[in-house]
Each structure stands twice: as C-alpha cells, then as structure tokens.
Length: 142
Image (cartoon, rainbow, N blue to C red; front, side, top):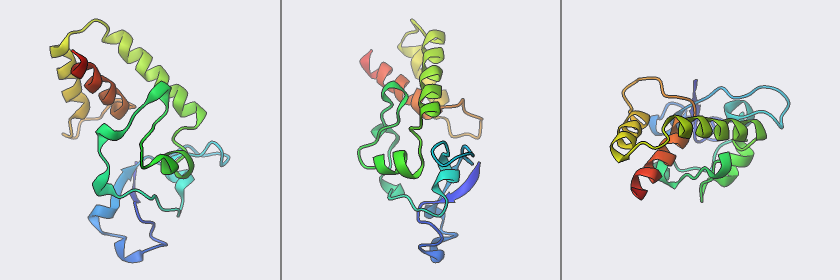
C-alpha cells in the first residue's frame, strides 16, 4: 500500500500534504498499460472524485465489476479497476465467500458485516468492500 492523492501533485502542489487529499492505494498491477491498475495505471493523472461525496453504499459489484454512478470514468479508465483479471478475482472471491456463508441467518451475517466494516487496524480480506456490500444487501433482504 502507498499514499496517493485525489488531486494530483502535478495539478496542485499545495495539496500535497493536505489530509483530505490523501488516501491509501494499492501499488497496482505492473506490466503493459492495458493490464496496469491502481496507482501504477493512474500515475500523475488525477481522479475526478470528490472524496467527501464517496460513500461505500453507492458502489455496486455486478458480476465482479465495480460500478459507481459518478466515478465510472475513474474506475474504468484512470485506475483500470474493471480489467478482466480483477473482475474474475472479485467474482471468485464472492463465490468462495457465499459457499462458506451459505444458509447463515441474519445474526451471523450482521456479525460478518461488522467484521468486514471494522476500521480497527485488523487486516481485511481481499475484496472486503465488495463482500461487505453483498452482505449488507443480504441483511437488508432478511
């Protein structure tokens, strides 16, 4: 993981150390440009996102893709987060998760959701935000 900037340093050096302009980002997938992801892909390009408006509840993960009504360009073009190998990995993570938690009731799912949303420094499973989104909707349906 590395520290990244919502507004690129090349666009506004004055925001370089402004807390609200910083976020944790994965280093990304290296390789040819069509496979690069996250910060490796983004480089000095800025994201259009206003961090104060981003809510986890607004993201959707149909069939392993990440979708957001206002951030799709950043997700697809700037960060390349819907590249084929990541979509497959998210789909497989959800398949494993649902097999492991199949048939569990609302109380169990609420406990799993609390663990997935915990911000207490514990390491989260890969694709935790997607899994939390899935569990949140499952709890609401029950």
